[in-house]
View 1 (cartoon, rainbow, N blue to C red):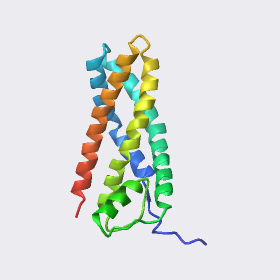
View 2 (view 1 turned 45 degrees about the vertical axis):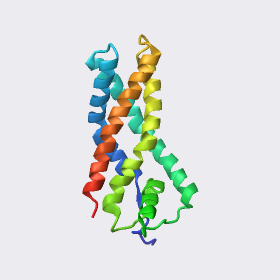
View 3 (view 1 turned 180 degrees about the vertical axis):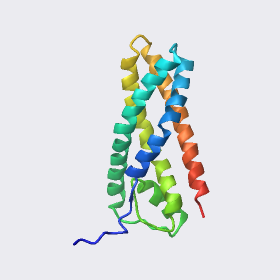
Length: 175
């Protein structure tokens, strides 16, 4: 029988996927309203198409962002703990090891929301790429540069919302 290791860390793919699922509706609403302000679309059409684009982002983009951050973690740290002895080491631990947190038990209450917030950075770029591709195809009657600009603005606002929410969650868990 193999013992269960309680100190293997926290693979953030699971909390991140749950959080992005919870954020799905507010993100689609924010992005749809922004797109409707920038383009001549009805709100129902924007909700449907932006919702579809965000579904792909949630199902494909979030795991891809996690994999990229996990590769960055392995390359930059070699999978070793960076420590919590100083503010610099704490910052490095939660940013460079955001994909798979080292199990600093006392620090996990703030590290999990901080890592989820850090993971928004690659999610933003992947989301923008996926959503632009999908929405340019969904709206062929629209001017392509206008679609690209509208999707960029919509993503800026939705990720600003997510970043603020993640930052507030992190601060509320600091000791």
